Length: 239
Image (cartoon, helix red, strand yellow):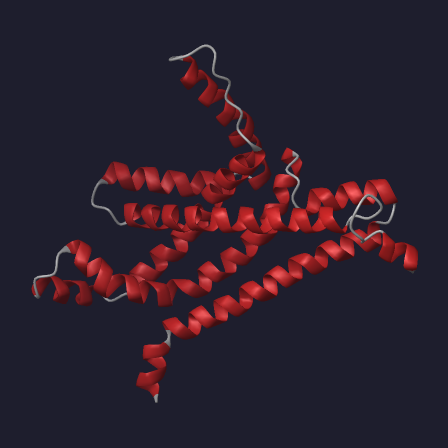
């Protein structure tokens, strides 16, 4: 037992510092990807409701592609294809600059695209759940489209979309593990390295499960608070 605990210590003899460092990178990747996915998802949802048919066509094609292609394949395309595309673009202006797309940035972009494709459907459903008469009434009162979106549509959008987006956020947390295939030293990759070096798969994979569960529990608490906050007006009306 003491030998197993020693494997989790800090320093040259243990793997505790590597696991914590990997956990920190996993959290950073999740926190960096989530806002990108939300902003893109909101933009794609608005594009699907646009009166401009090419914009609607692009938005529908976007969600079809990124929901249909496996996330792992999307990661490879962004990491390798994106690096080649950027290098060719930079090569038009300079032959000396070498583009090196990091695994973290590639994972953030790829997972952000996938998350936004699913989030756009959730946001679109939430937008459709808001009665159109409310926007028409706001316009009749002299509010602009932007002001109507800010004061009337967006507050209700949060309440309707939050349960679905919360689900997608928890899925995104797990999908960060896919970036380990790009040699990013996040939690799963460092766990696999530790398993290979110590031949103790049960110990280290169990520890990794614990880290992911802690992250999910903390996220669930934040999600619960956000749902209570978004429903505060409804709770007051019901009382």
